[in-house]
Image (tube, rainbow, N blue to C red):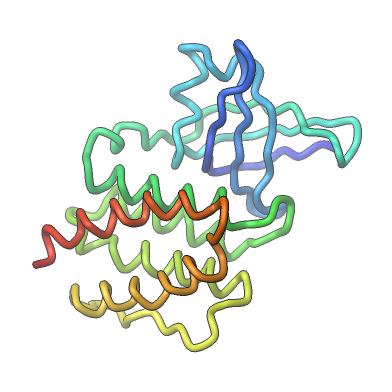
Length: 202
């Protein structure tokens, strides 16, 4: 197995004394996990911040083996993690992707949508400029997993009540159907994001 492509870092699990298991979203192969040798090092660890865009190379002898992953930084969003609202948005969007999506199933629309949502968080002057993109990505994940019948994202220019109502609608599907059981802890990141948004929306 050999995959070379851009990828968005979604989750990092430190493994052993030196390495890390990284889950990243790719354009054609979906969510792919790989082992990064030296992933705990000072040089590589900043590259593995969730939300970063990397040039990834996955190598494995068989399809069933956890591939070795090497990464080169293409675009860093690590600086946003020092700002509470953007950090909460990146944390949730990446956690949702890493936990909800099945591995190695292509979701090309989700790759483009996640990159667009992260770019909105990065460049929009305020949360009002990216909250709708974050909600639309969440709803796209729900729909992509087969649970989005009847979900309608608010129109462009929607105000806070419409956005918060949209989060309530998709939240029920996430908690009841997609992130139930052991995966429910990922919803903590979502709750932090919504609570921080509510502080500026009310």
